[in-house]
Image 1 (cartoon, rainbow, N blue to C red):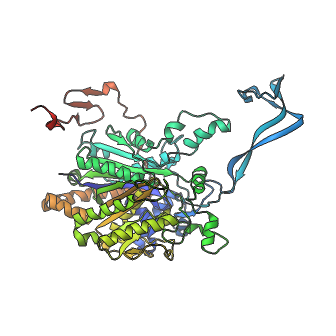
Image 2 (cartoon, rainbow, N blue to C red; image 1 turned 180 degrees about the horizontal axis):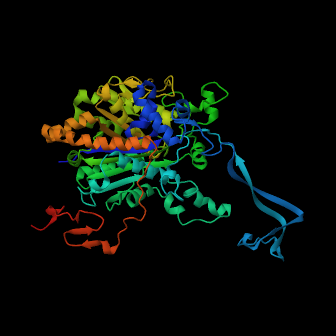
Amino acid sequence: MKKLPVIVGFGGINPAGRSSFHHGYRRMVHDVLPQTETQPMFQGLSTLMGLEQADDKEFMLEHTLIRKIEKQTFDLDNISTNCKSTLNLGETPISFTLSKRQLPNQIPENWTIVEDGNQLKVTVTGSLDVLFEDTTEAKVSSAGQLPTGFNAGAHYNSRNHPKGIQLSVFGASDAIQSIGIEWNTLMSHIQPDEISVYAGSAVGQLDDFGGRGMLQSWHKGGRISSKQLPLMLTQMPADFINGYIINSVGTTGTNMGACATFHYNLRQGMHDIQSGRSRIVIVGSAEAGVEPEIMEGFRAMGALSEDSQIAKLDNSETADLRRSCRPFSDNAGFTIGESSQFFVLMDDELALKLGATIYGSVPDVFINADANKKSISSPGIGNYITVAKSMALAQQLLGKDGAKQSYVHAHGTGTPQNRVSESHILNEVAKTFNIEHWPVTAIKSYIGHSLGPSGGDQLTCALGVWQYGYIPSIQSIDHLASDVYTSNLEFTLSHKFVGEKGSEIKASLLNAKGFGGNNATALILSPAVTMKMLQNKYGESAIAAYHNQNSAVRMAADSYDKRVIEGNIHLVYDFGTSVMDENDLKITQQGIKLSAFSNELKYSVENPYPEYLEK
């Protein structure tokens, strides 16, 4: 019997704020929540942003979500570049002096060099190729930026770490501490290798401490450091979690799928739990894509909404940068964002045993390619398959009427092509499963497109719906485009109340349409449905015992949340504290004993291929 992967902890940060305990979700729907629920969110935001006045709500609202790129990110009007030129000297040579260390390795044939004291006098005839330092202005001025003033690297020893790695440390640490159970306690209940970590990014770490610094170093006359290449690799978030946060010898890696990368990792972790290979899984993604070169790359593809295009949508001379991402309305392109989202999954048996808070469950994640297509960037048939499979499974688990009590987190990028293709996919599936008004939201309208972690942004929001009862509106639009399919869909143009703790919603579909045909749809079951399923499996007495134990876990988790709100942010980051070598393990024919773990790593005693042996 398969084990059900349940969500027991989550954390991170995106342009709406901290993910754990639904802080970021509350920022998105703050206007319909009572003050008792929004006040802790605002207090937590002020801490993250380093504000002296915790009651300046207007400042916090203006300096979160999608907005004009701030100078702390980069200077829109003065992006550093170089202008390549050739100086045609004619018959008049030019001379200049250099120190010996400034001399190029390969001396051009038209250079004459004479020593002049401690300097070298260089005379050039004919022509000279030069690079003039220059600047350029950005054509795209908006992005989903993290809250103004937040700096993940300030909370641990982050020297020379790219921003994407800093966000990974913050997100994973936040998720682990949100569980309310000490990590060593969790490890005492499992074998050392019964844990998996699947985490990564879609484009890698491309700031000066990673890929950009490495690739530009020689061209700027500098040198490449020993850290730039390894720290730029896409799987590095997982490596940092294993090596410096949880001290893991379990399964690890990342499964890249462009904008569906989080879904791919979630699927990997889900399969490990279902198969019994792992009992605890950390899945996630972190991306820091608000960088000039990355944005220019997407702009050159025609994917980003430029300021001039946004202004034209409103028949205005100025762009409404807060509304640059307009899913399913008249739009011009997506808006890039940055985010870090991490989740802790357990098998259902272990979660009940430990009294871990169960926020929902992940019965399956479907991934399908597009088959033959005209263009690698164009949408294809794969996403029809993933959405339909998800709804078919929802119907099997919940019944025909129960499956209709679901809603969709659309990929909703805000591009003209997406609004047509995705709305048609969702509309056709709704028709097929006899859903008359299927609610659809698109939270990229708030936080932008964070690339790899975008599915994690969706999941944190879905968990918030089951706590506070509101499906967020598509807040940046006031109408649907004429080419959007709507017959069986209900696009949320205002916050949609779906009962206390989202009681009217039994499942959520998280949809992702990644570049190149990386389609994925995750089916997420509500905590109420999940607990009912567990009661059916384990019985009422087991669930009663679980609730009794869970009360202490919730208190510990709430205590962590309160400490962070008040400014006591302590990231888990252990560098070199529990290093093991060949002297710290003992290998036997039954297993391996490791000095840093109380439990032994035991080999499997079952032959997985008995039918292939001689009778």
